[in-house]
Length: 216
Image 1 (cartoon, rainbow, N blue to C red):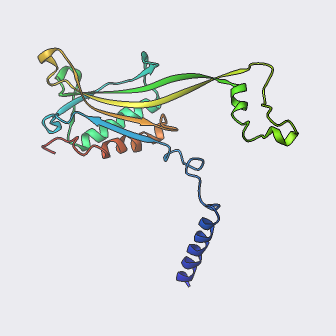
Image 2 (cartoon, rainbow, N blue to C red):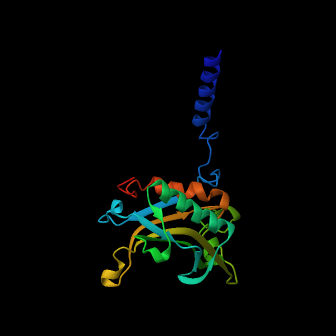
Image 3 (cartoon, rainbow, N blue to C red):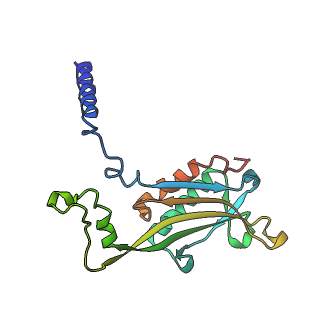
């Protein structure tokens, strides 16, 4: 009986797919908050992550707006992300130490916001659809649609992302430069919530198996 139910479900699915995908889920309109997120990691391929032992992480989160550092915050979500990084670093065998203990690695977390502005011209918008709204239908063949006024609309998009950066403090004193070793970037919906911090940070570390102490 159970096999019959499975068979009927497969048949129903096949029928739906045949009807122009009428029963299929729209991948963009029906995405969950988690499915909308993008995880990007980048690292210095010449770095030997196993040679580092200790790290220190900033006790607050930098807020960067359009390329400018505005402030540092410690919200509930900020604290959750900081703790999530600590948990993953500990799991990979790295030891948390104070700033005055000369840590090998330094970690910072930043929330990044960028505003993009654009302009839409409505006459151009409607002119685009001339081929769809045929003037011949109204008995005016050869005529184009137009509006006797010029109207514009200004739109603004605000994008947000969360960035985690790991830098080399162990060799920073040699040439007075601090080099970046690893970066994890999270984009998507609902990324700044405390409840999702642990899962999001774990996703970045899961993409980075090389980020591990050799003695662990």
